[in-house]
Image 1: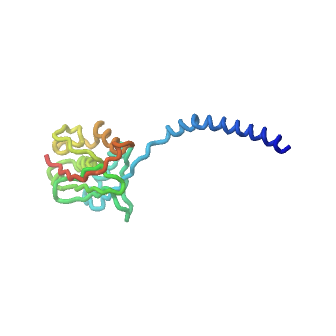
Image 2 (image 1 turned 45 degrees about the vertical axis):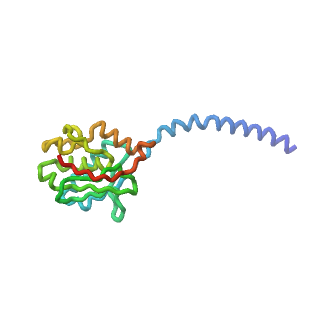
Image 3 (image 1 turned 180 degrees about the vertical axis):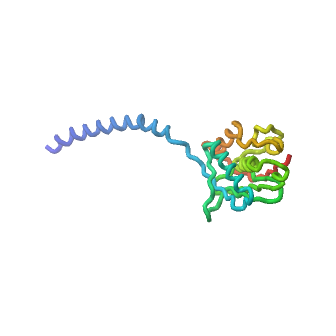
Length: 191
C-alpha cells in the first residue's frame, strides 16, 4: 500500500525536478551575463606627496573615471599600499607596472618637472599610468598622456587617450593579458 502511494509521488517529484533542472540554465545565464566584471582595487599612499597631494587626488580621479577594470583608492592608515607617491627634488619618475594587489611600485613627484613649468596633475596622471603598466610614448603629441614631457610645457592634457585606456583595461582584465606581473623597471620621464 505504501508502495502504491509513494511510487506515483516519486514519479511526480522526479518529473518536477527534471522540469526545474531544464529551466535553471536558461534563467541563470542572463543573470550571470549581467554581473559586472571583477574590478581590481589598488591602494595608494600619498602621505609623502607633500605639495602634490591635490594633484595626485585629481590624477586618481582621472584614472577612476577613465577605466573600469581597476580602481585606485587611498590606503587606510596601517594598510600597505600598492602605489607609494613621494615628492622629491629630482625629475618625475615611476616604476613600470602593472602593479598587482600585494605588489608595490613607487611614483616620485619630482619637483624638477613642475619647476620647469609642467602641469602637476598631468605629471601625476602620467606617472600613475606607468604604475598601471603604460610605458612612455615619446616623442608624442599632447593628446597622449604617456608622451609626458614631449607634449610640451604648455600641455595640460590629463586624460589617457583611447589606446592608453584600452591597454590599462587589458592589463587588469581577465585572461592571460590581465595576469602579467609588474616588471618593476624604473622610468624617468626626461624629454
